[in-house]
Image (tube, rainbow over all chains, first blue to last red):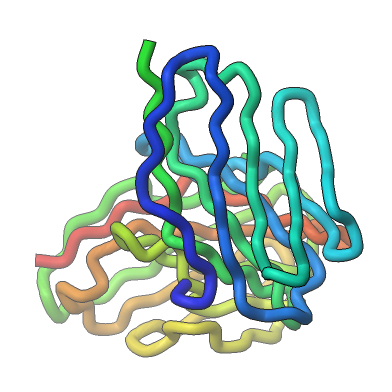
Length: 110
Length: 112
């Protein structure tokens, strides 16, 4: 996962917005994904964005893509304690292979 | 987990032992994947299979073999386990025609 970079930790207060950032290196990546992993569980697909889009919104989630800077972000509005988890970004490479970042651990304090 | 099952959930092996991790889907999709997850490193692709009977190496295939004898199952084999293979192993399925991958619950493997 060394080609996809994320900060390791983020701490926010309940009700605030969370912004998780990711940078990737392969400009030919067609799809970029956000996955959520709760403790002891598998990965849950949250949302994804096609590379020709700048923004995608899905309820409390907003994904922003800056192709020029190869920067992807996930904004969670009105963050709740149930949002505490590790969030992974991933880029899709040839053959459908996903390259993952290291994951950002989001901690939501009441 | 979108119909993806993995067995076993937990396993402890001694160095040099062998074992097979099983993954099965209850759909009929062509593409299946094996990843390992290590702390601070995200997930890394071990092997993938684009269809029944075909397999290809991912980022970290050394020390592993895979088998895709039918569409439903994709197994991962460790012939001679090493402590460096202590990890959580995830299987994933990509529905035909989609760009999403759905993951199983994982197998937590410890090699002592």
